[in-house]
Image 1 (spheres, rainbow, N blue to C red):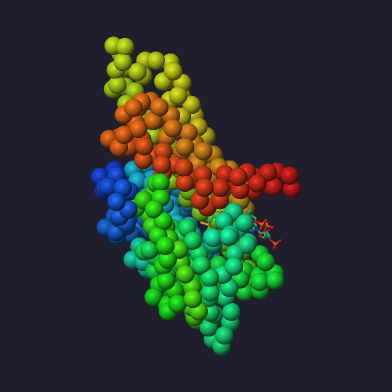
Image 2 (cartoon, rainbow, N blue to C red):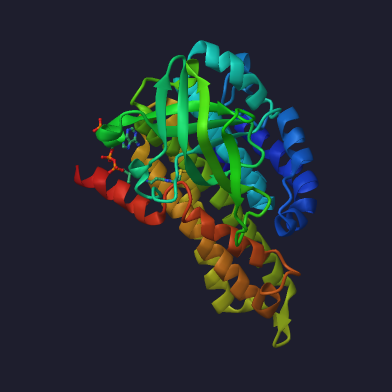
Length: 379
Ligand code: COS
C-alpha cells in the first residue's frame, strides 16, 4: 500500500518496523506473560521520537502527522500489542487533550516530558458504573478556595501504574450531566491520589490496567483543562483520536496473524504437501488479507481526516470497528491454520487472539462504534 504514503511516512514505517522487530519482539512474550512494563523499550521509543509523534517540536514532539502515528502504532503492535497500547493511550489520550485544550502554560509544563517519554500519561473517564455510558460518571470536583478537590474512583485505566500525568474527567455541575463534566490534569504524588486494584487480564499484560482513587485530592485551580463544564466534549474528541490508535494497534495484530499464518501454511506439511496447497487454507488467507487491507484503508482515511482537521468521529468509529473485528478474525483464523500447535504457547498466535479481543472493547465497544456510525447515518 506504499503508493498511498509519502516518502517521510514510508521512512517512519521502515524505521519503526526495525525498532519493533529488533528491540520489542524479543521481550514481547515474556513481558506479556509476566505483566512487566517495558520501561527500557519506552525509554528507547522516547529517544526515537515515538512517544509524541504527532506533536510539534516546540513541545518536544516529532512534528509528524497522524498517518505516521498510525503506521508507528501498527508496526509496534505487530510485534507487541501491549507496547502499542502503552504508547497509544499515552499519546492519544493524555498528550492529545493537553495539546488541543491546554493553556500555553499547561502545554509548556506537561508536553515536553510526555512527548519525550520521560513521563508516562493516562486518561481517566471510565468508572465502575460509567463504561459505555461515559456520561454517567460519579467522580466530583468541587472548587474550594484556590483548589479543585476531587473525590471518586476511576477504573480500567491503561498505564495507571506508571503514569505521572493523568487527564481526569469529573463532575463540576452534577445536575447538568454531560454538560456538567470538566477535565483536569492531576499529577502522580498529589496527596489524596492513589492507585487501587490492578487488573490481571486475558491479554496486553505488559500494559498496566488499574483503578485511580481520589480522596479529597486537592489540585491547583490552574489544573482545569479547557473550559469548565466542557469536559465531556473534550473526552469525546479525545476518544475519536484514541480510536485511531486502537484501530492501528488492531491492524498490527491482524497483520502479525496473517504473516504467521502464511509462514506456517508454507512450512507445515500434511498429506505429503504444504498445507498452503489446500484451498481451505488459501481461502482463509485470502479473507484475512482482504479484511486487513479494508481495515487499513479505513484507518488511513480516518487518520487523513484528523490530519486535515475536519470532523472524523464516524470515520474513526468505522476504522476502530472494522480493525478490531479484523484483528480477532485474523487471529482466530491464524490459530485454526496452526491447528493444535497454535493453541500452545510455543507460537504467538494464541497471544494475538488474546490481545485482539480487547480492541473490540476498550475506547468504545463495537456496539458503541455501531451506535456512533448509525447515529451519523441517520442524522
Ligand atoms: N465530538 C464532539 N462532541 C461530541 C462527540 C464527539 N465525538 N460525541 C458526543 N459529543 C457531544 C454531543 O454533541 C453532545 O453535545 P451537547 O451537550 O452540546 O448537545 C454531548 O457530547 C453529549 O453527547 P451525547 O448526547 O451523544 O452523549 P451520550 O451520553 O448519549 O453518549 C456515547 C454518547 C455513547 C457516544 C459516549 O458515551 C461514548 O463514546 N461512550 C463510550 C465511552 C468509551 O469509549 N469508553 C471507553 C473508555 S475511555 S478509554
